[in-house]
Image (cartoon, rainbow over the protein chains, first blue to last red):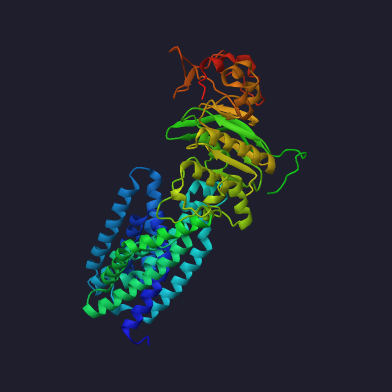
Length: 275
Length: 293
C-alpha cells in the first residue's frame, strides 16, 4: 500500500494534521501566529544548512527553528525593539538567507517550490516514520505538559505563583513547535505550515466547550483538510500545500455558517431550564 | 477543607526583610518589612503606583527582590487572584474547567468552593461571558479550591458593587476562619479595608505606616463619620498623604517644600517598626478628609 506515492502522502499528511491540532490551539490561544510563521520561515535556512553539512533535512530544520526561537528570546530581553519588529526581522531574514544559500550551492539540485509549497511526490517511507515518530513524541509531550502549558497560557504569573514554571513551559512549547515544523515541511511547505496549525484550531473553536475538546477537534478538522486537499491536489494537479490550506479554509468558512451558531446557542438554553 | 489547629504556634508563611524592587531605572518599592502568619490577614493599601502589587508579587516569588530578602515556608501552597486576568476569547473555558487550571480537584471540592463564593450556578458558564463581579468570584473560588496556605488577593473587589464588596469581604473572613490560611489582601480603596485585617500596611513606595484597623474603628471620629453599622463589617482606614517621595529620594511636602527626609511630624511616619501602633493618636486626620460611601 505504501508503494503508492499518494497513499504515502495521505498517511503522512494525516499524521501531521493530528499532531498540529493541539499545538495550533496553543498558538491561537497565546496569539503566537506570527511567531509560528517566523519559525516556519527559518526552516528554509535549515534546509540549506542541512544540504551544506550533509545532515538529515528534518534535523537541520529542527535545529535552526530552535536557534531562531532562542535568538528571539535573547533579543526580547534587550527590550530594544518590539517583539513584532524582531519577528519580522528574523522571519524574513532567515527565509532570505536560506534562499541565497540554496542559490549558491550549485552542486545540489533543490526543488525550491517543493520546499516552499509542499510536494506530495517527495514523501518517502522514512518521512512517514519521522512524521509518526515525531508526532507521537510531540503529542506525548503536549499531554504531559498540558496543565502547566494551559495555566501559563491563561496567566503566567498565576501559574508561577501556584508552583508551576511558565518559563520552562514556554521553552518546551518552542521545541514542540520546531518539531512540528520539521516534520510537516514536506507535506504543507514552509510558507504554509502555520496555516495548518491555525486554521483547524480556529475552526474548532466554535464547536468546543473545553480546551481539551478544542485540541481534539482541531486535529480531526486538520485531518479532513489534509485528505480533501491532497485529493484536490491529485485531481487538479495543484501543489499539495496550497490545496490543503484551501480545503482548511473551506472548512473554516463552513463553520462560520449560521447553523453552527444555532447549534451552540441551543445548548445553554436547555441547561438554563434544568436549573 | 482541612481544619488547622488554632492553638498551634502560628507559622510564619512569608517574611519580607528590607525587600526592594528596582525596575526601569527606579525603585518601585524599597525597604518593605512584614510577615504573614498562618491565619492572619494582612492588607496592603496605598495609591496607584505605590508598589502594592509589586510587593505582593515579591512575597510569592513572581518578582525577585533586588535588595533585601524574602523567605517562604518550604512547600508553601499559594492561591493567587491576580489584579488583571484577560482570557482570550479563543480559549473555551468554563468556570468549572477554570477551577482545575493549576491542579486536579475532586468535583465535590469544586462544587463546595463555587458554593462558598455564591457562584454554583455559574459552573458551566464560559468565563468570557461573566460580569466583572462574577469573574472575581470565580477567580476567588479557583484560588480557595486549592486549599492554600496563603491566599493572595490583588484587588479582589474590583468591578464588584458595594453590597457585593461587603459580601466578598465577609467571605474572605470566613475562608480565613475556616481554613486558617494566611491572607494577603491588596486594596487601592484607601478608605475601605476589612475589619478583620490583622495588620494594615500602607505603602507609598515604602512602608508609610502600619497598624490594626480596630484601632481606627474604635476611634470616635471614625464612628461619627461612618456610623456603627459600617463598623460591623468594614473598617475605615483612610489617610492623607501629605508628602510625596520623589525619584531622587527627596521628599516633596504638601506645602511645596522639598526636604531630604520626611519630617518627624509628617503623616504616618510615627513608626517604621514592626509593631502595631495606636491610631487613636491621629484619628482627627481621618475625620477631616474621609468621604462617606
